[in-house]
Image 1 (cartoon, rainbow, N blue to C red):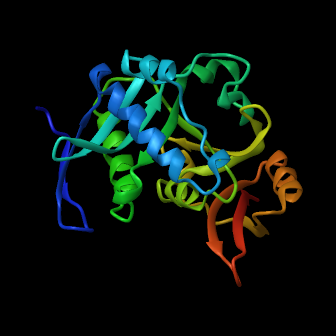
Image 2: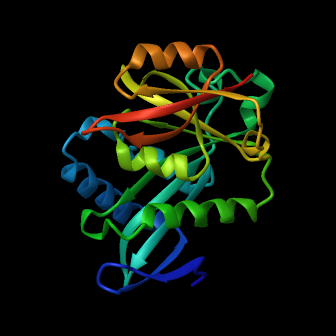
Length: 236
């Protein structure tokens, strides 16, 4: 077995291993997703994938990795090579048509409820990006969508250096942040002359206005009480 990573779970001191997932893992993948959706307080926050969508990725249109404790799949993460269609996230963030084939989606990340708190989402993010870097692929951008107030997923994306580039309705009218990361690193360069502003996450209209003017959401934090705010920035 070609394991990509081996570690120990913080809760319970149990060893786990990470490998690429293949078509034979599909039943377990669907079961993990089912348990994750059932455990969510607000199921609409997560957009589950269909069996056909997972099959599409596993047949070579992307990359999936999974964490196993013993022989049990406890978490997985997926990257997708998306079709170039009218719903392409690259269009949502203003990329020209010739750049769309360079976009890869960070599609979904699921961790079984009983194994949360082990930083598996973060670990799998690092492993899958390392594995992507070892393959010869023409990709420049990683994009994904996250619902406002899906705090764990938002933290995960910001921790990877991704930025909010749009906020709009996707998937049949559900509001989503659209994140992007330029794999060439150009957006991570330290630029001294920036303008910054902090907006309450629930203020959708102001965020959309800033994003339309070229601002990017670069981090989030908890303000007083239970209020979450997003920091936006643009180059002067």
